[in-house]
Image (cartoon, rainbow, N blue to C red):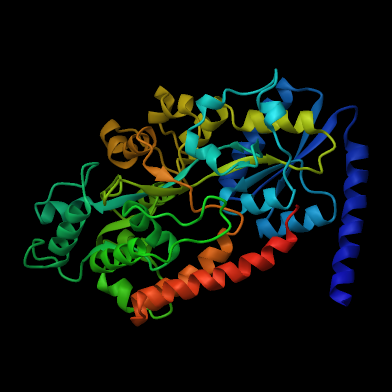
Length: 445
């Protein structure tokens, strides 16, 4: 109780200090707070480019920039104190919870008004996670997609063609077996054909490729305990490296697939588009490319997005909308991609622009890509996936965190401990449903 009182007192003091700051600093201008997380070189983009240009275009608005660590919890605390930032960078993984709790302002009247946007310019899947009960609660910034990373040197040594958009599960399995065998991979020892983790996000692409879905239509009940999931788990286990499937994370020293792929110990890895700049910078001569994920009964990847939400607590919704709109403009998204290239922009106009293929980087933290062939190998798969609608955010909903927690445990017990899949999946489903019933009590009716 004492700790709760202290937290509430701190929030009251922070609220009062915030009001005082705004009163002293507005100088006739409306003060809008925006919050982000990320690396220092990302902050520089906002502080050195975006905010000065926005304030030049809108001289009646002053932007106060907040970089928050422990972001999700900090936003929840600020909201509890009545001082949530006016414009918040949000990830779709937890944004659905914010929406159900009434934290985000519906933006339709602004999006479709005289100072609105062209919704058709946004890649459809990026808007899918922002809608609830017919209203839209955010504006997309980018999209993070999972792809198939491959080591060109190891493929060359095994005399195998590189992966491409026509690959199937059978192609993946065949290549993984060849690349792991010194008798067929050019004499390379201790190489894993394909690395993926043993968590929900590692399993989901295979599940969707097999034709599955995670939720009922209302996204209130999980539906992953079925024969499609069992089939996907069996293939997932057959094609993943024994090293990942026979040792827990602690037994591997906490190291995941990325580290082993970066060090040249794996021929392929399934992971997010955001890894490409890091691999190019820190891969120690690693020659790699990225391709769309192979097809099962259908082609499919999984994605999350970063978005800009406007707080339901804002006292200046029109001005907050202007900032959110600016941050998701074609020019802002193109510039973000050119410098950081961790996730492609959410707009077709950015994705299809000549500038999309011209990665400038920001130096050591994010290198440039100047060779068109290198761009094609590392980034050419992205437009293909998006233009052919080969990724989904169906798994994202207000109870995603509950699903991840229970399904993670079930998958590890199946893959690492040999638990019976049907029983483990049913147990995970029942426990997820129980947690959902508790979480629903905190949502706005």
